[in-house]
Length: 467
View (cartoon, rainbow, N blue to C red):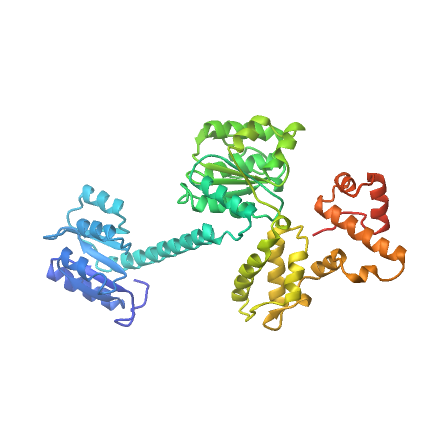
């Protein structure tokens, strides 16, 4: 052994079960020599009763015992919901008992006779694996809690309608299409569907289709074999393969090239595909959720998206509304993110000032909920007191809000100045409400697109502002 001997009574707690007194004495000596705290008993029924009392972190049990053998003890513990690590020891080497123990979740299996020091290595390995499994379970529970329906924030009718559709989608395994502007929470909706759905035990695999060129996107989706192209130095599993028994989320699916759309259609129909450069046909049973920030039906009409693929994707349609369509939810969202970031940055910030909250509610939020989240995080970082003030909010927010504000100051000064101020504000508002599409903004304003272009230059709106 390379590990140094630990002080007795300082290590993890072990329950040792065996009906052979000599073996018990030997194993007790070896384990205590390495610092483990050991409780012993010679019967499986007694062991089941004292597992909790002894606060055991690991059970080491002989297989062949009267009344209740080692496999029966393991089964009884699992049926009671105890996922405690378990090592089974036997002098019989039975294949049947080995398989039964493995199926029930034993972490180690030792056959007598063995070097007594081997039990120390087995115990350490089992305890480490038990720690890993508990941590994975904790993380999985935390993720599921994060994306539970209780964490979907919004009481407005439009958000409640979206939540109802998300819940309905989670109860099926069919394809889902989520539409909405950037920052409206499309991926959050997709994760809520997955982690509350039929495939929640499987992986959630996400891919932003707009982040890759055509050839690279194909490799990311289908995978590739070593040597398929110049830089293919090894086999690469694609997202279809990785999402087996889980959910594949394709963000910005509107940007998938036509050449890949037809291949995607086949995968959705057959759940079969080949890697790039490969001959073997692979199978993957995944649930597809796609998202788009563009009008996918409009792209179909323009010939930019296959109609058959559109219908295949949009079996269930969910629309995530723009934040400016449900401003009544802004105080709820603000409170939610304020709680998160005050905990993250360990600050004692209770609320926002009345002026700051008014600005939050009248701001246009072109980046939607994601922008609001970022704004609150920034404000929490910048705030020195226990209340967020207007000065703590991002400068871009305060500047644009002042431009859009409609107060008595606009009506002071000369008539041309007042007219120009009002005209500038109306043009900015029309552009913001129409994603800076000049044709639509001009129609709202009742002027030609040419006149709008002139006035945009006049007031310094020459290009779309970068958010």
